[in-house]
Length: 375
Image (cartoon, rainbow, N blue to C red; front, top):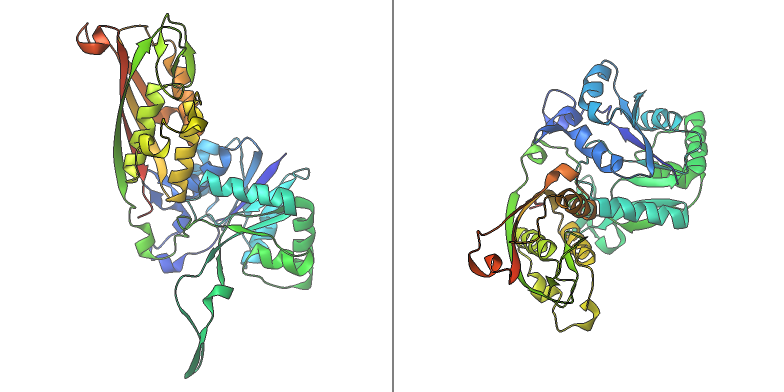
């Protein structure tokens, strides 16, 4: 499957009050547009990202998106959002299967939401993420107003994902007819058919006002775990099976590194630890790979709108020597968490023969996680 992405970035963003294109503003150390595009670039199915930019901003965006130059192309923005989106669609690969259109100023897109929209589109030909309206609503006409049943209304988000052939045809008709629409779902609905809805994400906000550009909360969590070394068990650390005459004893695969990482992640979002979430009294966790449990923890963080920034861990083991296996451990953990490999750091040390680790009775691990909180 080939997916192309259109990122409209040509808007003036006057409500942000920055005096320049808000998708070029820095979010931490990276431009908003780069943070947004990086979520898509991490998916192997995404083969092209088209950034739709305003006249005179081509050089600034080329610099901002240079780390993704192998996947990014540019298209010229139009006088309306409809014309800008159409320009981006025309720059997509002719043989792509899906086109995702996502606001360049929505950098907090999670991999879970992106996958949800792709899966919905694969089944239905379209996908539009929505959120139920939680505030009370009133319809206002001049001096008169009336209450509105909010249960019938939903807020619309992006990415909106569509069958590529149908979306191209729909936009071609819209432009030919001279119509202007506020989003892609309206174009598709007018010319191609009904749109399929899926659950959105409260953390997937669009940066609009000055307050939206204030830093979100950074949270740090810590985790610690110890397992006893015994005969007759495989030694698994970071999802890597390591040759040794002993393995770690536990209800699952007893991956002490991943257990510590999971607890660090959970503590960063004030969630209960793995002993509560995955109790050793539950047979469905017997012998389970801890990497599968890590994936469940990642889902929990996604639901809370938390984005993993980095993970660091120190393994305390007298034997065996682990340095040759650490790169694969880091790669495994990063893959499950949906972050770059250089955002996971694992080191190993002995305790110079002191304590239960030094006597080779067990292996311990300390881990720390840093997340960007939606709060």
